[in-house]
Length: 208
Length: 208
DNA sequence: TTATGGGCATAACACTGTTATGACGGGGGA
DNA sequence: TCCCCCGTCATAACAGTGTTATGCCCATAA
Image 1: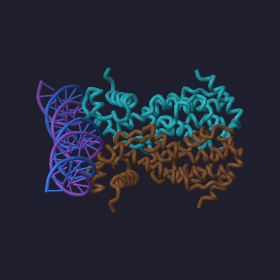
Image 2 (image 1 turned 135 degrees about the vertical axis):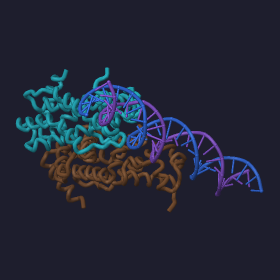
Image 3 (image 1 turned 180 degrees about the vertical axis):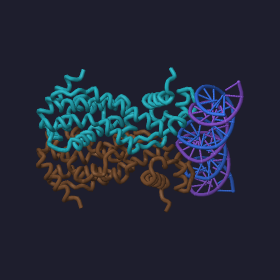
Image 4 (image 1 turned 180 degrees about the horizontal axis):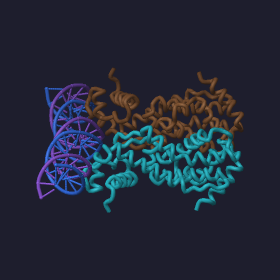
């Protein structure tokens, strides 16, 4: 039951955050949850911001794991779509965590550090690899792969972010709408509507 | 000096929010700022969430004003670009306010209500009108204007949001990068790269 | 066996939103 | 004119927050 007390705190914090929302994540609630006192947060993390930092680092790691489950195929655009779907799914599974990782939502005065953002961007390297292959295959317009990836990420983040804040209705969030959105992203990056649609069909089959 | 105490509170709150950040916006700081007591917040707004609500309503109104300064021309795509630039500029002028209006950043337990979101979406109607004209002119693919507007808004919000959270470097945020981003959005909506570039040049001239 | 130091429980401090209380003051009715 | 009423808001208190100082316990090392 009792392993590394650090890990136990991080897990309890992540659980509170995803199940009860950001306002329920307090040092005293954590002490109650783990059966210790608030001092544990300070001996192991130096304060609440340090703990939140550990939680989002774990979040980045879990996101990287989910993205890594997408295997390369001979259709790089379809691979990109699968990555986008996995990214969106991860955000939906832990909305509050996603809001802290990418949305600027602050808990107990925590603020993203330069290092945090560097790690966050690093988890997107698999996407950049997929985009590189899209360019090499002539599907996307020739350009700096990282620049294209950043654009696509911004666009996907915007959709996810507005979904999480409730600005999009249930019908706006349907699978059909999401596929149309992805198609537009690919077309904006240089793909033809026809080929993009075909890759969406392929990606759809590839996902169980 | 002393007009409507409601308005005075809202203005002081907006000032604190934009100048000192969300953590400085407290009932006691407001009382200090306006020379009264914390009770003013409760008699006029029923609590801090009510005051925050009044602040973001004011924010929506100011955003609508800024968008309304963009006049229709005979190039609807250029008009859309000007609207996007005005939207982005508004967000940059009051980042913390934008984060509460669209980013899901919560202050003192405030949460966006359905009514808030309805008002937020209503401020984007000028964008939908521009998009409608883009479709009528044959520049954008035939589709539901509101759906296309929503997509473009999501994409623009994603860029703005990640700019505000610091995920994009100074070079990523250059004017050239922003124009390339806008061009990709237009191409994704159905415009040709050549026409989109031309409209960007037009919009650039139109902005002082 | 003793000394040292990490882990953490307790209590206190400064802050937060919120509520109860009561005092002030101006407007309307008798 | 008097009086009452009600909106306004200053004060104080309560429960919650992050944080810090204190000191106790106990395991490990000498």
